[in-house]
Image (cartoon, rainbow, N blue to C red; front, top):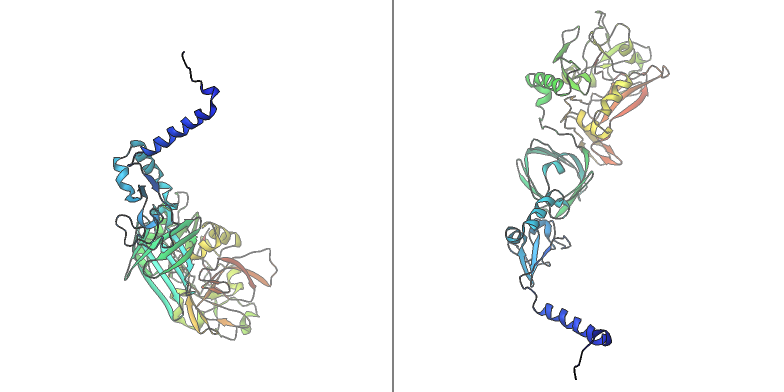
Amino acid sequence: MKFTFHFNRFPFFAVLLVGLTILLQGCFKDKNATEEVCDNTCQYAYDGQCDDGGPNSLYSLCDCGTDCADCGTREVSDNDCLDGSSSSSSGSSGSSSSSSSSSGSSSSGGGGYTMNDIDGSWEGTSPGFTIQNLDLCSDGSFRFEDLIPIGTYVDQGTWTLQGSTLTLNGSNTVVYTIQSVSGSALQLYVVGGGYTTTFTLQSDNPCTITGGSSSSSSGSSSSGGSSSSSSSGGAVSCGSTVTDIDGNTYQVVQIGDQCWMRSNLRVKRFRDGSVISEQPFSTNGGESWLLTNTAGWTYPGGSSSNQQQLGLLYSFEAATDVRGLCPSGWRVPTRQDVEQLIGHFGSAQAAAYALKATSGWCSYNPFDEVTMCGNGNNSSGFTAYPAGFIDLQIGRPAQDIGYWFALNATLPDYVQQALSLQSITWEPASTNPPAQIAELDANTAISCRCVKD
């Protein structure tokens, strides 16, 4: 008699057979099969040393593939920890192309960053609560400031980036491991220092580190003015210099569609030749002449040696006199002029950093008995220095604050407005307070920076 076995009549045996098939496939599994692993769950990730026990690792402190920032992608095969690059050369073309195409986004996991990811001007606070400024310029130059209580440490040179390793090559070589870049935040681990600093982006405009040469070298300033004009569009013609009625020559810089003097006005006569009266500077204020609505000027800090770098401080009456304070074809800026200037940089903080000179912006805190500096990077070429001011009560010496006229005809006659730049603020602590349009008593003598009509 013929016997026929029907699975549908014996479901139990059908399930048993399928289970045995799966089990047998597992027994004969390909021993060479691998799995790629890349994460940063290792507690020692981002310290600049490979700690997962695989090839080229210094230590075996973590599981294979969990220190991807320092070791790269790993391949795990039969509990062996292999270098991920070994399979990419011998694996399928599909796998290779996938690895290649993901390099742009691998910065979040494997540390494949590019210079475009981190170039810009950054400000951070170290664990010792010192304020650090780091300019990473697109031309490969850098400038670093650490505002420590006893002064300011400054270094500059060139920087390189390989994977997640950032190296600053200046008077000292400093190596960082990039922990993350997210929007306007950058986390850097100091290799050998054992701490992480979180930086906030101040400006993502490409910068060129020029030190003090941009403002002190008249030869390079002239070429800088003309090159700025040609690179910002041909509709505006700024020229390279302008001369006032006293024969003082000023370098010119184009910022957006505006042409600005590179230094503060220091003329002592109106455009028609009329003399502007010299007035005394006193730390107790200038009530004797500011209250009389005198069109006058005074030296910043009361010293004539300041005028070349800082210009002169002018009363509101001098700035608004119909005889003209600025050279022919130029004017004292309005509020709208200053708003356009600040707006060119995208944010008030970016504007402050770009407008301020690379030195001269320091402030003394008498309570903590420390001096801290909040210099800019002068990427704009504007080269703003703090000339101080004088009003009815005090004369502020040239050290940590500057005001420049921003005329506004809609205000009452006892109020004026001005572009305001500061070195630092103490609460909250920042070495890059934003550029502002401040309201001042009209009886305040401040700086003037002319703009072309």
